Length: 452
Image 1 (cartoon, rainbow, N blue to C red):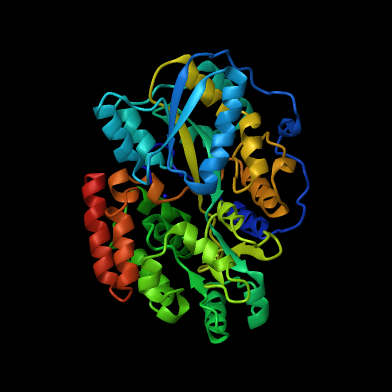
Image 2 (image 1 turned 180 degrees about the vertical axis):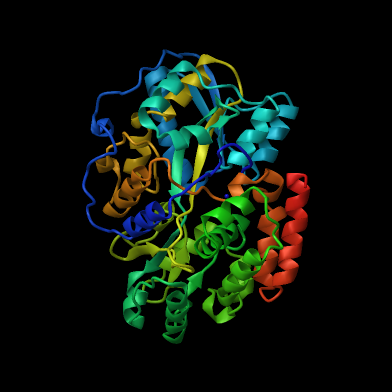
C-alpha cells in the first residue's frame, strides 16, 4: 500500500531479490539465529523505559482483527513497563485523511502507524511530525539496517520507526487443492496460468482476489511490473519520472489481464473479486474443508494471521511459493508500517523507542502474522518455520530491497480508497480488456497527485 521522496524505495539488487523469493518458499525450521546478537531471544529487557504513571497515549493504526489484537499485546506490555495508559484508535484505510482531520480539529493522536512513505514525507513537510528522540535513535542505530532508517527519515531528519515489514511477493495456496488437481508450485507466470486452468478444471476456483480493497490490486500490478520491466523502470514509475502511458505499463497490464480477463480463473469471477475484501480473500482459500472457495491467493506474509483464523495449519495445509517470474526473475516487493510521533512528549518518544527494540518485535513475532526488519531479533521468536525463513531473508537483504510502489506515491494517488490507483485498478479488474483506458486514467490521476 505509496510514497514520494528521499532515497525512497531505492535500490534492490536483483540477486538479493531472488534470494528473498527463494527463501520465502521455505517451510523448514530455518534455524534460530537472528541477524545480529540474537538478543530478541532473551527474557531480559533490551530497552530502558521511563516511569510514565498517570500519562495517557493515543495510538492509531489501520489494523483490525488479528493484527489489531496482536498489536494491542505490544501496547499492553508498554503499559505494564511504564505505567502509562494507551488507547488504540483504528484509523480506517484512509490514514492520511484520518490524521489530517484530527489535526484540523486540534486533537491528533500521539503516535500513528503510517503505511506509506509518501504520507510520512507529506506529514513531515507540513510540520506535523516530531523528530525521533535520543532513545529511539539509539535503538534504530543498534537494530536496523541503514535502508530502513533512511525510509523513516525526511530530508535527513529521522521521524519514523519501521515496526512491521512485509514481503508482498508471495502466493499462499491450499495444499490439498493442489494435490487433488496434481498441480505443483509454478515458478513462471506461464506455469501459474496453466496451474490456474488445471485447478479450474478440477472443480476449484483457482485464484482469490481481494479486489474490494484496492491496495491488493496495486500489489498484483507491482509484482508483475517489477519482474517484467525491471528495477530501473520500477523506480522511474514509482517517482513518476515515466508516465503511466509508457509501453512498459501497457505490457504489464496486458499480462495481468491474462488472469483478470478470465473470469473462470477468479473466485467468484470479476464481480466476486470486486466484492471480496482482503481478509476474506485469504480465509476463503483455507476454509471449507474439501470444498474451499479458492485454491490460492497472492498475499504478503501477514496473511498468516488470517490463515490462523481457519483450521488450516501454515506449512502443511497452507503453503507458500514466490510470486511467479514474469520476466527473468521472480519479483520481491516489500512494505511496512512506520511509527511516527504527532505530539511532543516523553511518552510518545518512549513508545517509539520501545517499538524500535527487539522486546516489542518479539511479542508480535511470537503471536504470528508478523515480520520485523529488526536485524537483532532472534529468528527463534517467530511462530513457525515459514515466517522464520521469510524473516531471515528480509534481514539478509540489508539495504537492498524494493519498497511497495504505491506507498511511494502521494496518498491521493497511491493510498486512498475510492480514488487514484486503487480505484483505477478496480476499474481495470472490472474491464480488463481496456488497457489503454486504464493507462490513461492512471496517468491523469498520477499527474494530478505528483503535480506534473
